[in-house]
Every structure is written in C-alpha cells, then in structure tokens.
Amino acid sequence: MPDTTIRSQSDVVLIGAGIMSATLGLILKELQPDIKIEIYERLDMAAAESSDAWNNAGTGHSAFCELNYTPESEDGSINPKKAISIAESFEVSRQFWAYLVQQNKVSSPENFIKSIPHMSFVWGEKNVEYLKTRFEALHANPLFKQMVFSTNFAQLKEWMPLVMEGRNESEKVAATSMAIGTDVNFGELTRNIFSYLAKLDGVTMYFNHEVQKLRQREDKSWRIKITDLATGKKRKAYTKFVFIGAGGGSLPLLEKANVPEGKGYGGFPVSGQWLKCTNPEVIAKHQAKVYGKASVGAPPMSVPHIDSRMINGERQLLFGPFAGFSTRFLKNGSYSDLPLSIKPDNIIPMIAAGIKNIPLTKYLIEQVRQSPKDRINALREYVPGARSKDWKLERAGQRVQVIKKDEKEGGILEFGTEVITTADGTLAVLLGASPGASTAVSIMVDLIGRCFKDEIETPEWQEKLKVMIPSYGQTLNDNPALLDQIRKDTASVLKLNN
Image 1: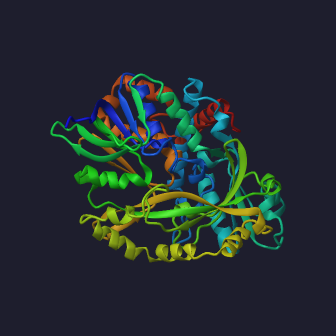
Image 2: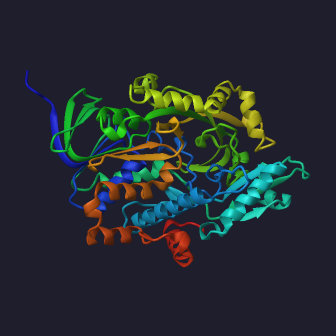
Image 3: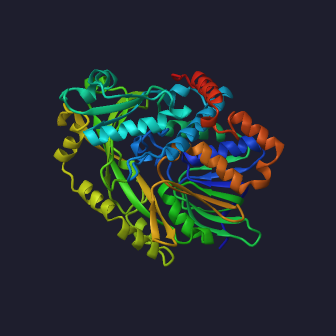
C-alpha cells in the first residue's frame, strides 16, 4: 500500500495557536524575514483556549492591582520585586504592540486594548494595613508612581460606586487605583497577529491538526507526526526548532519529546467559572478592574475580582473566577489527561507536591461543593447589592499549574510561568499560567536569547529588537525619564490614557 503521508520541511514549528506562538512567530519573522514557519493547532481556530477572552483574565497583568504578586512576609513587610518584574514586562509588551500598530501589522488597537483603572480593594483593619504597606513599597518605584491610596469612603465611592453601594460608612476599607491600567482582549490580539502572519511568505497555519509524536533525530532536527483531524490524513513535519505553546496541552507533548530537561515535570489542573452579569444597568455602574485578597490556599488564577471587560465589542461585567478541579488539561481536553500524564519520573514530585499543598486541595473541594447561593454570597462581599437574577454562571478557562522536581522537597507546585529549553536550543516548552499572556513578549525575547544564541548577538537582530522594543536592554524602573517617554508614546499609538 502506498505511503500517503504528507511531508514538509521548515525552520520553526509552533505547536498551539495562542498568544505565545503568535508572539514568537512574529518576532522571529521580523528578525529573519526569510525564516520558514509552520503552525499546528488542534482546534478549528486560533486563541480558543487560554488566550480566549472568556478564558483569560484580560487584566493586562501589570501587577497594578493583583495582590498575589506582593505577598506579605511573616514580619509584615512587602517585597515588591515580583510586581516590579511583571510591570516591567507589561511595558515591553505595550511597546511591541505599539510597533505592530505603527507598522500596520495589526489594526484597530481599540479592538484589543482599552484604558480602564486597576484597583485593589480590601476591608478589615489587618487588610487595610497590608494594602497601605503594599502601596508604600510599590509607590516608591517609578513604575508605580501614579498609584493612589485611599481609605476615604467618599473617594472609594467615586472610584467604584457598585462596590461601595450599600456598605456601612463606619466599615474600615481601603483601595489603591492606577488610572493607566488596561483591559486586553488577548483572543482578539492573537487572531489579529495570526491573520497578518498567515499572509507572509514562508508561514503556513494548520487548524484541526493534532501533534501525535515528536522525536529528535541524530542531526538534532525534529520529526513531528501529526494527524489532520478533519480528514484523518497523516503528516510528518521536519524542522530545526520546535516551540510547544499549547497551554494545558504542553505537558503531554513535553513528555512525548522525551528530553532529559523534561523529566520530573507534572501538572495540576485547575478549572474556573465566572459569574457574568446580565443586567445592562448594573454593568454600566462599574468601570474598573477591582481585585481583592485570595482565600488561603487559592491558586493565583482564583484571586477574586469584579471586572469590567470589553469582549467582542460589548461591555461585560464578570466576578470570580471560582476555582474547581477537573482532570482535563484543556477546556476542550479529555478527562484522561491527568492520569495519562503520570509517569515514573514525575510520580514522586507529584505526590510530594500534593502532600505539601493540602490547603489547596481543601480549597478546591470547597469551591467544587459551592451552591449557587454560596457564589452569590461571595459576590456580595464585593457587590453588596447583587441580586442573583442579574448573574449567571459561565465556564471559564482551564489552567495547569506546574509541578517539578525539587532536591529538598521532592516536588513543588509552581504557580508562575515556566519555560523549559533543551541544552542544544532546538526545543522550547512553555508551561504554567499567570501572568502568562501579559508578559508574552518578554518571555519570548528571553526564549529567543536561549535558543538562538548566536543570531541574537548579531548587529542586525540587536538593532531590530531595539526598533520593536525601544527600551530593549534597559530597565525602565531604573530610568524614569525613559519610562515616561515610553508610556507617552505607546499610549498615543494604542489610544490609551497616559
């Protein structure tokens, strides 16, 4: 019987059509216009999983309002290091997006990014003290100099009327506000980038194509076996470099790659749900992103927030997300994802991480057992006047938190984003979740530095990186004048408040 397998050759294969692959593909194409790229996505469209607006917080995670990036130490102090790093990375993303708009590579920035204040809100004496300490730690840095702190009830009512409506004025409350916050529709941005990429010579996109196997050959190149889910036809792709940016699907593919750097990694899936407001009058009352403190044991994706969003041209109001547990690694995945991911090399780290994260397990069980009344009661902590008839439950995205080997602990659960690259630089895999999409540009530039070591040192690539990201090679928090100029320039191009 004749072999009907289709074969193709490329320089780069991107697996997964989310914001990470879109960003990496476009940066590489800008740096080397003749590079040949193939993109494989198992679903029938781009950005249908973690990058989709309904599956992604869309905050433009800039650490302006997310309290989980500034945990309190035992002595009550706040280390702003992580928040500064994330805020710095978000400024890099803004520069790259502004470049894309200026060069007409993506159009209509108002379709994917809008200005909206980012606020943190707490109540109770201890939490008010924490927020004040956090404000002082952040405000001292140029990236956060526009942050405002207030315990004034009237001021807070002006900032977020829906949240303050019906509260007792004697209650101890506090909030911070960053007027230059943004709402980002990463689904829209991702599809916009892929729409441009797909028109370029040397770029081919394949939807409804699922990667079955990948194996490194003796010459260090990769052979990838793929199935066309629409026709059942088989395909073999040969390439010098592979990037796996498939969200929750990345871990099983890393295991199939069978590289030493991937040994010992496991995944812990966390699902999410939103309460979505259906009353236009209520939606119109709230125009901010207001984040609170997470419950003990809660994963970062479950930090409660009452969130004004623009999705598909319509203003939406969401509260949540409520966490849950599913053995699926993707929203469109299989219940066998978690069991099949357990291998001899990661079973000990997974057991060790499980034992050390009993509070998380307890929290997830409590979340799964919540009744509709429980969810409305949680909402009323942020919107005291909320009526159950104005809200309905919507399924949100699926995230897989990283579990990895640890010499001391046996295994640890990581809540951030983890990039694994092989020693020879031919394979890179992105695992994890928050802050993810918002820091995609920094993550991908760092990845290119690790996997294209010689090329990134050339004058041509260095010069081009500085054109795409004017602050490339500099730290904005250490250069207030440059930060002000960058923010002014990107705000002008992206049509944002400065």
